[in-house]
Length: 224
Image 1 (tube, rainbow, N blue to C red):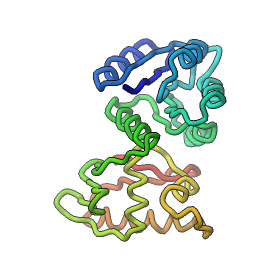
Image 2: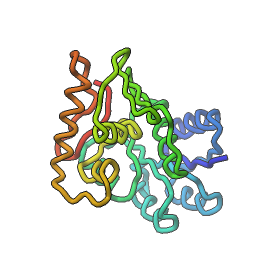
Image 3: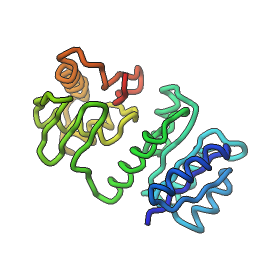
Image 4: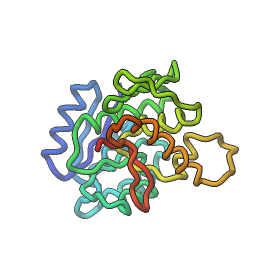
């Protein structure tokens, strides 16, 4: 059974997440401070940490640095009310795997947790969905409602990266590292080209935009 450590100084948040994640089948530890989180992580090493950023004494980024020093491969999702693009980029560059902004829905956080844990175990879901768009990994098919969206192999790779981490802001470098071959050494502006092509194909009948540009930060898969 996988263990999740939830760290937040708001008991309402930790209680809600403990109930929801326990119901989903995880072992859940909760901490109300950075110091308590580090003690719990050493006593009961988690598979994943959901970590609030704004806490007194030791903030979430300080906790993140210490967790990373002890386990470089630990999955960490930052949970915070800081929604500025610079804050999100800073959190990711500090070592977080993902970033969820408060207020949040439990369903979105649950999806992020499952995606991170799958990747850490080398697993991949056969079917991914977001809104009315369904991506079949095995068949390399994409459906938007009842309409099949015909994509090239590379367009499919890029869209799959977005679907594996909905609501996560990703810059060009992150997308290149996940959707292109490791030996690709071309211009990173190719990402803009493929995002534009995906938008054209997903919005051909006036559908709402799902791949949004976050100025100065990158792109995100998000409902309108």
